Length: 314
Image (cartoon, rainbow, N blue to C red; front, side):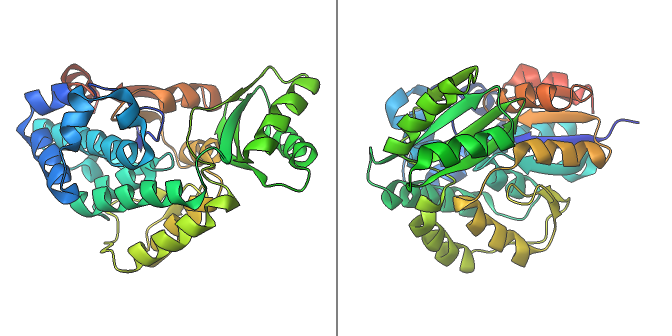
């Protein structure tokens, strides 16, 4: 018997044009984009469908935009299939900002509230560290222990931490730019396959994001969070969570904490998941899942044709 999990992408999956076909094909998707635009008081959908790529990539835009596309895919799937996602899924999870998409898909967060929280999250993360002072780098062909020793060697008293354990030998480190530059050199000295600086504007998921975590704690304190209709796998614990008070706490920790994606996928497999479906823009998480748990059947759905194909398998 197939057991399905739905997962939601994070930053880096954005591209101009995303969501446009969903908007044109499904009234349910159109309603999501309209709700997000109204919640933010701007034409984010216009930027997504036909705007400037650099503007879309700005953290405060990319985060709510990726959330909107994921929820537009969820609503299309539900309206076309005549079911609620919770009827078909054993659990949901999302990568970094994708955790907000997962929570909205599970009914914990409203769409307008999720969009506003992510706009604030993007702005708070950008404010936390002046542009150019912090950054991130991807190390390819390493495990967590190797990445930690590279961080220890390269930090020289400056902040340098594991931000994402993405699995498949891909680990992202985050910290002060000078430490990031040293980490790339140290990684090459250790014979690491590849070490590349990422095109991001801040050192996400590091202790340098503490000011942003404080802002999110304040915002989440007044946000309405309902119990999820299905369990959510949290980024910072790689374990299922269903209590809104705990979810609130973990979303604050997530700003500075490591995204434990490799372990999250392993948790899903241990819980019996056989099929993983990535809803929204791109297919980054499907690629990672194939390296972490090759036995998982994966699919992605962010266009009308992909939604139709996925419906046939549910």
